[in-house]
Image 1 (cartoon, rainbow, N blue to C red):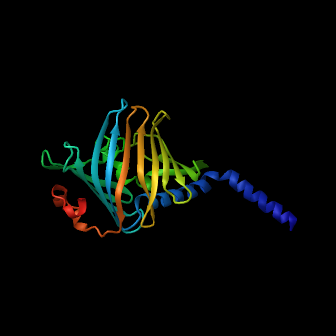
Image 2: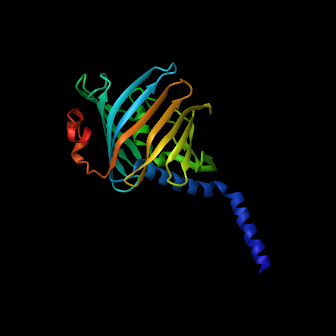
Length: 268
């Protein structure tokens, strides 16, 4: 019996040494799936008033105020629709943004610009462009498909008192402006507490942080978040208020008709 135990343990150790990447990859995929569920898919639908503060390197500030609505269709990681209405400043007032997100392929995105009374389609190649002048991209707003990256669990460490998994996310295609991203995922609720983006030279250039988490109808929700561009010195601070889940958002909201004339019931 003793000899059998020694051989078994030796075989297990050998397997771990030979195949660490496979074992960690499976775990990392599950972590990122749970993180996506916690961050992007809680509830059947979601609504919040959003204040976005754009801060230049010199400290000048601009504020954008909007209402964000989101509705899920099917299971976690499945179809979603987003609708955003802008209140201020004057140059974006009454502008609207809509996203149809699909698993396994690029999302469809539209922007209504009231100044020219035109609905403009956001091309897939522009999904990594700045979202209305902020340090967040169009893709950041609705999230990236998990299948677009390879995920590897590289370590575990704390952010303050919170224990986190640290996962490396490497794009499978070269259509993004970063070579990889590190995600610190809270072990308790699977929210991403921090993300670091590294450019193609391997230098850190963008950092996301979840600055405040509150429970809304039982769902842990990031109500304050920051994205910093270390190369430009520009920062975007975002705060959520009037957050709510499962309010019964009508499917009809997500249409070109309401991009031009959104119903007050949903945007106020």
